[in-house]
Length: 228
Image (cartoon, rainbow, N blue to C red):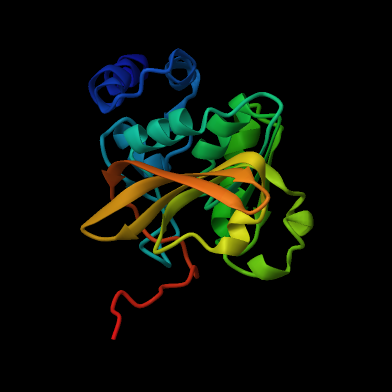
């Protein structure tokens, strides 16, 4: 398989048509070897317009997101070189690798021990040393972290690499003023890519720019969709 041609086709046929036009993002996608972050059995699918399941499949929600979704999130966040990033849902480490190229530091949390090891190995092989993979439940203890101090926050950027029914307020409390949080929010069959910016001590601005669907992040609360 010609990986370079496949990578070029992914960018030109999937990512650009999805309104990802930031030259820095496109240049990063052109050099970051996505094929090195997919499971060995799925290398031929590394550049396909699909989610890729990640072993061990104890929970069917663990996957790499579609390349166009990863790229659009990266473009929306506009990560800068001086910024500190928290990612919840490391998976294979590919999104952490992209973020690390744009940021000063990335802390990424993964609940599945086998994936923690996989992500650490993938990042090391890619020569990325400013992304720290921690085995942790990103949904646990959000109300007791003291504004993010237990994780090393507050953060300039928070990325949820999966979907949630709603963004917990305690997670927003870990954003610096001017910080941004990206999450895919809602319920199937259609969810919204949501970008929340902290504009003041107790003030947030929310925009929802595009629709997609992503598997749930584990253990985040599922409020009732019905009101009586």
